[in-house]
Length: 106
Image (cartoon, rainbow, N blue to C red; front, top):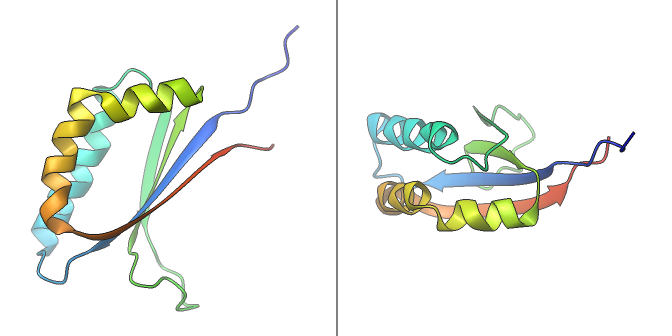
């Protein structure tokens, strides 16, 4: 029996522009989450709003965690036409992005 391989986690945090409306931010979020049904390399995807009271968020309000089986799958996702289309939706609303990639350690 082969041991379970760790999943690659792609963590993305967004800081939106102050000029972006709540409806525009919701459109970005729904567009991002729709990638799960368009990009076959995505194993799992989740998101949430920052609710921390520690005040270390530096303006980042939305966190997304996308899981892949390999670095190659992440690379293929980044080149996928649906992801490239999403970047066009995100671009006008993104002030900053913070990304961390790691293999999960159970």
